[in-house]
Image 1 (cartoon, rainbow, N blue to C red):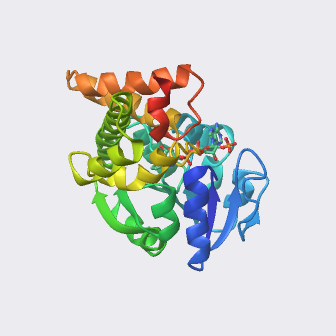
Image 2: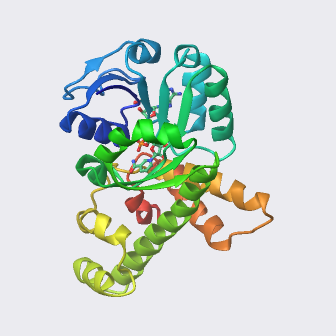
Length: 279
Ligand SMILES: NC(=O)c1ccc[n+]([C@@H]2O[C@H](COP(=O)([O-])OP(=O)(O)OC[C@H]3O[C@@H](n4cnc5c(N)ncnc54)[C@H](OP(=O)(O)O)[C@@H]3O)[C@@H](O)[C@H]2O)c1
């Protein structure tokens, strides 16, 4: 099995590493050179060169602006005839419809594949995958997807997987912000940080999010697995989705404002678990 992998940020590098560990030959490209260091993969100078040989092309990019740039400005669209693009980027729910349309018009195939889970689950093949698009494209992708994820939720209608991913991240971002605030008020009230975390883990804070972030919260380790800027992007897309249905999300707006405040203080590149540091 041979695939191209474009985008070696925190998540992309973890997924690429897992594919390599499970026997997939990879040709990789990243906008900023050097991010492939340590991966047993061929490196390419451009997305088009990376995509020239394999029939499967993974994308894992910051946002839909980056995906659009690769397809339209960096030539990927012209190089995707007969190939399947598996896009693990968390995209805007409207832009992703354009990606389905444009890739198909160019003679390629496009599978939405936003993921739930972060760097650690990706490196163990334990992501949850939300796929969107044609059934036969899912079947082509399945041998790759089964290496990186343990559960696949398939949404045949283009755009639904991305909508679902954004809905999931409203819960994710809100729970993280609530945990950070619980910790802050607990410490301010004189309680020990480790004790607060232990009791939250046995009580109302018990969650996948706390299980994933407890040690980072304890150590104040804000090295990025999932950046504050990235959850802010997802919540921005999500609030636009809500506005389309004339829904005002009080919690969602407040939580996005918390992450926006952290970005304003220069903390956008830290892990979103550190949102409490913004005060
Ligand atoms: N990290 C997670 O836990 C996680 C979990 C679920 C979903 N996601 C989603 O997965 C995607 C990647 O997340 P991440 O955490 O890996 O982000 P990241 O660490 O910020 O990496 C972003 C990647 O996108 C590339 N990029 C940005 N703008 C670009 C452009 N205009 N042209 C080409 N490449 C561009 C970056 O290249 P440079 O290295 O040159 O900057 C980098 O490879 C995002 O859509 C995110 O929402 C992440």
